[in-house]
Each structure stands twice: as C-alpha cells, then as structure tokens.
Length: 222
Image (cartoon, rainbow, N blue to C red; front, side, top):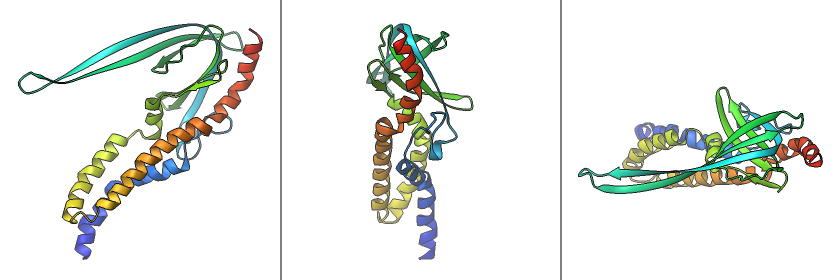
C-alpha cells in the first residue's frame, strides 16, 4: 500500500501543485491596490503605471494573417485566419505634454477630444497593457489575452506537466484518480474565468478613481 502511495499519489499531487496554487490564487482575486500603483495579494510583484490624456489624434490599422497547415503529402489540412487591430493614439496630458500610446487588439476607436487612461503592468523589463478607460464615454476596454498573461503566465507548462504525470497515474490507479483530476481542472477553469470577470467588475475600480482627477480637469478644459 505504501508503495502504491509513493509511486502514484505523490507524483500526482506534486505534478498538480501548480494548478492547485493557481486555484487558490484565483480565489483570492486579481485587483489593483488603492493608489493604483500596483496589485494586491500574489500579484503584488507587478507594478502599475498609467497615463491620462486627451486624444489629439488616432491611427488605427488592421492586419490579417492566414496560417496554412500542410499534411504529409503537401495537402492543406488546416487554415486559420487571424485579424489584429493596431491603435496609435496621440495624447495631451494635464501638464500640456504630449505622448503616444500603442495598443494591440483593444478596439478602442477614440475620437479627438475624448479623455482616456491607459494602464500598463510591468515586472522588470516585462510590460503588459492592462486596460484602457474612456472617461468621455465611461467605457472600459480589457483584452483577455493581456489579462491572461498576468493571471496565468505559465499555463502551458503547468498543464503539460499535469497531463504528462497525471495520465499514467490515472491509468495505473485503475482510473481511481480521475475524479480528483477532473474536479481540479474544473475548479481551475472556473477560477480563471471568475478572476477575469471580478477584475472587470471591481478589481479595476482604483484605476478609475485615481485617474478621475486629471480626467475631470482635461474634460473641463476642452
């Protein structure tokens, strides 16, 4: 019995520890701190910077890329088309300085005179666009792909490790471990979805609050 425990249960648990930690982290939530300079909890090693300005002009370009997969006889077996939206926005901040922000797949489409805030998360040399707030229209834009990079940057590695070890463990345990893995995976997927949704509802609120001052001044000065 002890041999079965060591060779099946222990590797199974160790391989799934990253997923278990992710479930716990998602449960704690992903939120910006009160002064909008960083994040709370397990994400506090990330910093947050943001700029608020009036839109002077915007250039939007759309690019389409098609990827074709070929089979062993050079026949086409798959075809995937993806479209990317690139925004280059010129802003004037409250101190009359001008700056440029570049966005990928945010579909903001701001009009000249709109007042927006662009937030970026950074950790060392790594920068990720977090959100765009349009104070004129009171709309917020969050890219799921960028948010995913913050919430779960090592998903591919963690899932691969889990599958490589859990698969044999499940088979050799006569599938007794299947319910445990299924429940863990369900909790992981639901936790990630809930963390994204909660951030959009309340976790982003401090960014709205901290940018309201300069945004209000810019809107009154138009």
